[in-house]
Image 1 (spheres, rainbow, N blue to C red):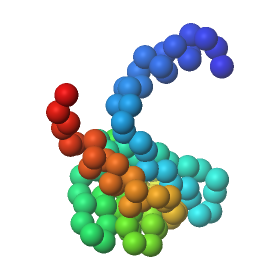
Image 2: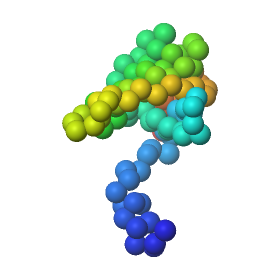
Image 3: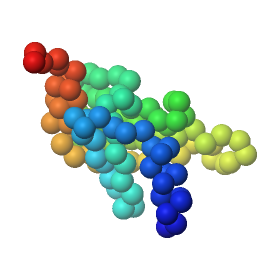
Image 4: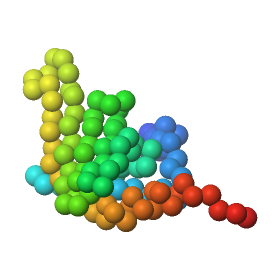
Length: 109
């Protein structure tokens, strides 16, 4: 990888807060992995969470109890099929969600 390309990637990727740990997930059929951050969380219940990427074109549902992941992407025209659905598993879901909540707690100095 060229040095110029590396610098461009570093400058275009937003820095994650130091206290924001990612939710790490892998796919069942391939070795692909996905990391999700608190900023992507759009819904949370006792049973599942929903995360979004790419302004909602990609939505990921994670079952909190089973840690199963379903990732749906709207690919759109001119591609067929227009949707991509991936299945996977996430790791330490409950712990990661607890850490995300702790990051919102303000502490006195």
